[in-house]
Length: 167
Image 1 (tube, helix red, strand yellow):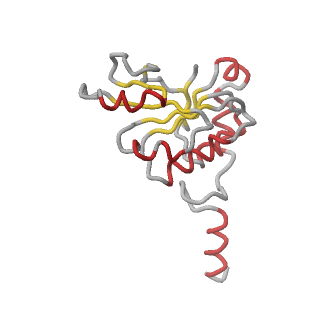
Image 2: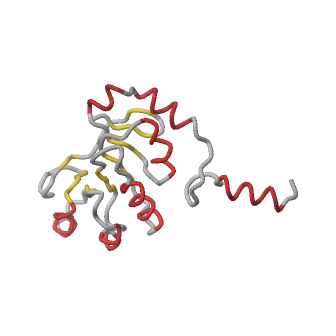
C-alpha cells in the first residue's frame, strides 16, 4: 500500500508483525499484542501499534511514551472516528508518528493533517483513483483550520486577535 505524508510518497520502514515476533528494527503490532511486544523489547527495536477506530484512546495512554507509531484503521472514508482518536492521542501527549490506514480520499488529507496525522497508508485501489498529486493539491488548498492545537493559529483565534487589535 502506498504511504504518503505532506511531502508525497515515502518508503514504509515498518514491518507488520501482528504478534510482535518478527525480527526487525521497527515492528507494527496489533493492539492485543502490544504489551507482550513492549515487554520483550530488550533488542532495541522500535514498536508501533495498529488499532481499530473503535478502540478508546484511553487504552493507549499508558503506552504513549513507549511506542513510536500508532496506525489507526479507517474501514471507509465515511467513518471519521479515527480523526477523533488522533486528536485525543495528540492531546494526551503522543509525540510519535500517527498513521491513518484505509480508503480515505484526497479531500480528507488536510483535515487528517490538522487532526495530528503525519502520514496515510492507502489501499492500492484508492491510490490508483487519486494519484499523489491530487493529495498534495488537496492538502495545500486549505491553509487555515478551525481546529485548535495543531499547526498555525486557527481561524477563530486569528479573528479574535484581529478584533482585539482593533483591525
